[in-house]
Length: 433
Image (cartoon, rainbow, N blue to C red; front, side, top):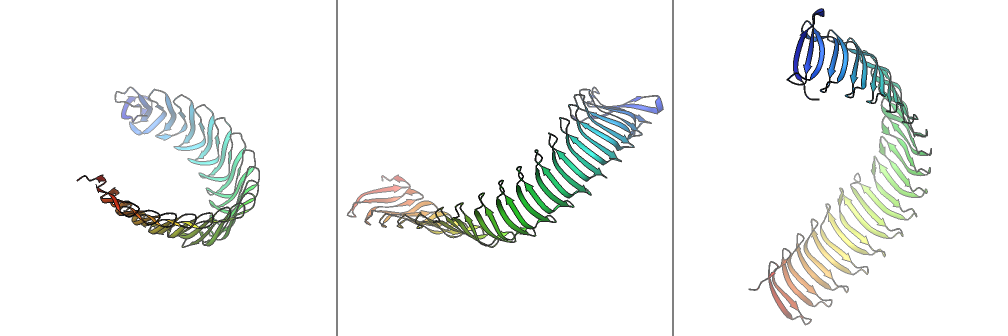
């Protein structure tokens, strides 16, 4: 709706010194917005019938005023002409029944007011006309039982209110009628039992809250009734041993908590009972070590964190539990020498890192352990001397790089160690001069 022009047309009416007032949407005064009467030329003293129109001329609101105050029945309409709302007023305050309708004409809501405050039962309905919810009100606040229903008419939820807050049990149901949850409230906070259920009737969660905080035993279950999770809360934080299980009842995790943080040793298992991961925790879980294992119980890797950053030497193992990769970390970044090994334990690569980038020498090795290549790096780019050897330690190639490009004299050697070709490069291109 466009913003209205505040234009008043005053038409004199002989009865009780009333004047007819019309306001308009437009400055040409062709589209009436409102029509009502005022007394003694006072625009605050609307008297008698009041009508508001849409820009297309349809009636949107009708009602009655007495000395500028709403009195009697007010009706609101949808643009299609269907009744939207019926509200009773007395001395400017809602009094008695108020009805709200869908655009189809079906009742949407029914409530009762006393001096502009909701009292008694407020009912809401689905477009089908079936009840959706009922709420008891007292002095404008929910008081007593609140019920919600599925479109089928089956009870969905019931909860008790006192002083405008949930107090007492709240129960929810599946559409089949099976209990879904049973939770107790005191003054708007969960206080007491918490129980949830699967549609087959088996328990899903069993817990207790004390004045809004989790307290005591906490359990969850699989749909088949098998225990899934078991722990204990103290003042809202996990404390003590926590166990989780696979759906066949075998142990999945054994964790230790203090004040909501894992501390000390924790173990995770494969479904076959073999250890999957061993962890140790400290410093509110910011410091930790992880050891991973295969389904056969073989060690796969070792990792460590300090203040939540990767730290120390990270090691990875082959099926024979021999180290195949060793990564150095400090403050979350690779710092120092990274080592790579073949399955037989022979070192194949040795790379120096600084702040996660190759910086310094990288050495590659033949299968017999002899040096294969020596490459110089500066912040991930080849920069500096380069040497290449055969598996007997004889030099094959010698040169240097400048920012990933061959630069300077490059020499190729025969098996006798004699230079057979020399090529001059300038920033990656052969220098013919």
